[in-house]
Length: 95
Image (cartoon, rainbow, N blue to C red; front, side):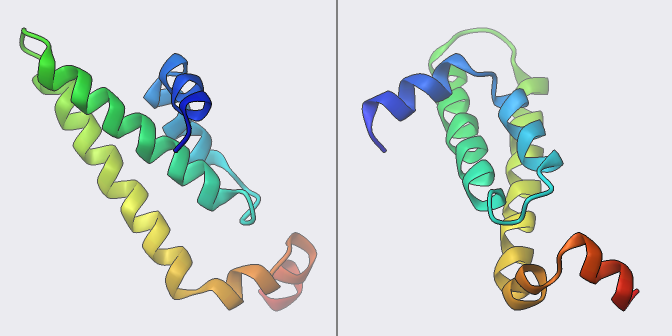
């Protein structure tokens, strides 16, 4: 990852990037959204590791979010052909 990408992700809340990944309806953009959110989650986890104080709730939220993103990425890997061939209009015909 280049420095510009890191700085851009650092200025955006990990929650915003996670929400963007979860709400992305374009499957072609979804892998990038997932990757951006995962990077932001890791950066925030590192920040929390080096700060003092009780951040248990946020750390737990980070873990939960990472698990969901991993599941979402895994589901994309298992069904790439079905997802890519299904657009909004094709989906309604097959349902």
